[in-house]
Length: 541
Image 1 (cartoon, helix red, strand yellow):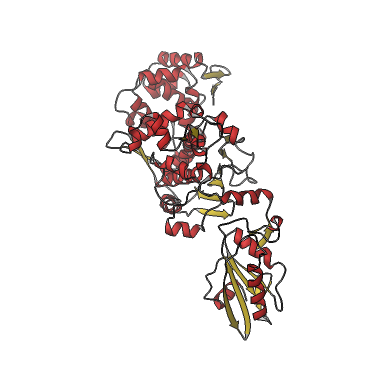
Image 2: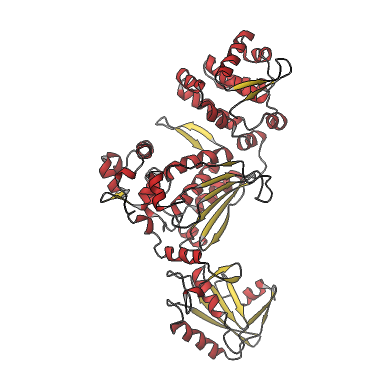
């Protein structure tokens, strides 16, 4: 019989993982490896009297069921294991043959081992494997689940909190959670009430969340959150390891915003102003990604040698987190259980409305992502890690939706190099900031990575770009807005001439020549080749 037929015959068992053993006359030696593995991973059933050959199962029965039962229970209770292993049992008669089943639950006192620590096993797929030293260390840390980052970081003081991060955090709280009582406290009480500091010493949570990087690294030597953009559907499919890797930042608060900024172009974003006048970006895809990002930062095992990591592939986004779950995934989803690994870090996110009060957010990730593009998130759960995969290639979308989703990097690149030039400050100074940001938002949602893809896939031409920009603007284009648009025209057509640009922008050739000279003087563009046969190159891209 196959697996399904076996399960059908044993219908009263609440099936999870299971392991079969022939055990006709006595317990196999490998029994205790499986007990250890089930206890340390996700629990499971041990079936005695069933033989497996490949994918088929044969019910052979046990010849001495009472002896098998007594030997198993006596060993479990007799001190062979370092902790007591509770079990429940069932007995079945199938075709006149007796099958005995024992359920071994996941333990709250991991690692569970027999005789000595080296006999610690974990479950990988359908096999039992001896745990590595790193995996055993992770299990010991799980014994302090929910308490470790609440402990004090020795040798730290108020001076180890990063001033800019603290100010930004308080400002953010004032904007997005104005009614919470913490806004009324002075700095000392604010830090104490949120347990960022305790008796003048940083908690590990406070240090990780708002601390100075140099001090964080005293306690977490290789502190970082990885984010990589990979040009392929997998590592083996990619031509190079990555095209972008996130730089190092001060703390978790800074990492959150930098990661979110890189993730945002992957999804559709709708923009509107709230009644308070704040910009609000609405997208079920964005909500799901933010939930996955915050979930990763809140529930990571920061004492693990592994690191939280985001990998942006061409067809999916993968959030990897060191640290297992306190309960099986389905139970966390169904009951919305709130058992955070790092309660203080979770609270700091909640106080600025970046996380909910309860649960792990898996249900919100599922619902929002399904609504976004029709695909269901994929979870890869191990005892010491969690992976969430969001597939960005879902149901067929309209060209305009693909444009917004697939080509969201242009304005970000422009911002990156403009921030290093004088023209950026001049633009901000001359142009109203709200309309400037509104233009960037418009650009994010409508244009993108490369002129060839814009033209070939979506019919975006310089004229169409100019018309769309002018149609979206409530006031006449200023000289600085014209220069900014000229840069976009160069990206779309690097052989752009002053004559052609002047026709697009409805100004004189002389005006465009002045604009070109200003861009060259600011080391933003350079001309490669002759005036007639050459082309423009944007130096910072």
